[in-house]
Image 1 (cartoon, rainbow, N blue to C red):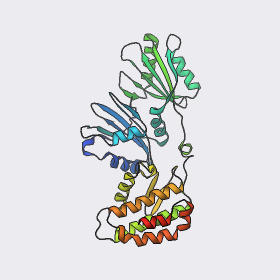
Image 2: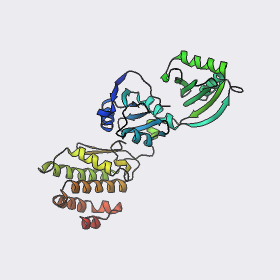
Image 3: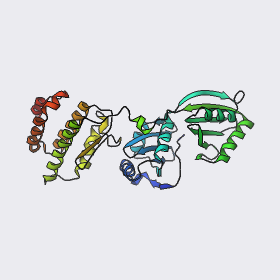
Length: 330
């Protein structure tokens, strides 16, 4: 089950063969702020939900595989050469997008409730009174019939109905599902998600200490200005920097450009994440020195880096970073 609310699409039925999906997603993060991308092929489908600075979640399904969260996002945004998706982009309200991004990771709280003992209409009223955020899965005894009813803070926001194979906010469809359950019987499962506000999701995240932030901005600005003044290197600095960040994302997850935790623009850093000051500094030092080496600027950049290391020696030592060892490696 891959669900995405489909209002008026911003774009629809684009062909993934002609798209860089990661760049497309990055563009709409900046353009719309919050929304979802729905992808469907003859053998698979999936969705990725986003806000301006973060990929919130995803879901992916084919005949043999079901993925949620980061695994689903990675699977969808790096399709194989034989996969060909129809891609549609939808703008979704910021509060709503958090809800839909959480659905794939909902946990069952009631299982195998039979119509022999449980009335679906009564179950809906009970879940409404308990302010459920989640859904009721309805499997009817008639073949291939049923659906899902979705709740947000106790309110039914719509359903996915097998006879339509689509999400619908129609009250008529909801009432039809209730009548079918009463007539044909079936089994119900109730799943709950933990609805957190945007602020609550970020309680474990932190901003770097101001002096660390200032030093790291200075470090990136050193490389950027050196890059701009060098006539032998071609390309856009920010693009090359993001590619280097992506290379290091397995070890330093906060550098992944598509998580939105770390951003550098206009010689300023915006970072809100779980990485501590020491991890942030180490990751950026490795990225800067690695990019300088990749660009063939290792030797000429050395004196500038040495000056920066000496200037911030005390702070780096307090973070457990050995300036002498860095200079020796250089």
